[in-house]
Image (cartoon, rainbow, N blue to C red; front, side, top):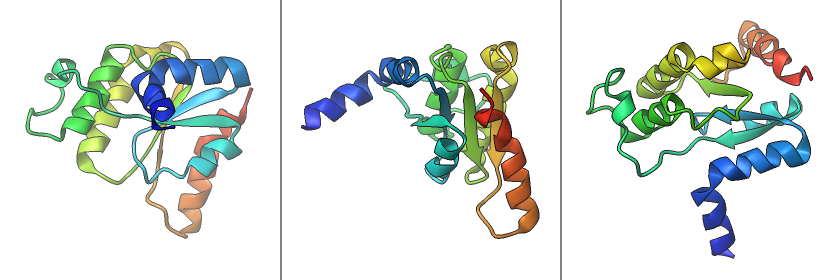
Length: 146
């Protein structure tokens, strides 16, 4: 049983591509565990949690200090290497300064987001403030569009 899940984790990009093709839905990557997956499902997408990998994050060195967390640097490295090209969007929250830096750099530097009209979305920290809820809803409407 564990080998099944291990295989998915080891081949996560291929698995996500097959989910996209099989279900004909948008793949929405998310950086932080604080992103509520239910919002992505409600918008008609498939949420995919981004993981670090074992590769040295050399491509992130021009954007982040080498003492920043390896997870954030690895995510940025993978994005810069084009490993997230299959994604239709990217979502994060305001939860960690280092993760935010990775997100900002992905948004600015990864041309596949801009070139293919993909939309990085940043959700506010979850609160009950009406304006934050409205802003989140407005940001997520494009994901629901076919």
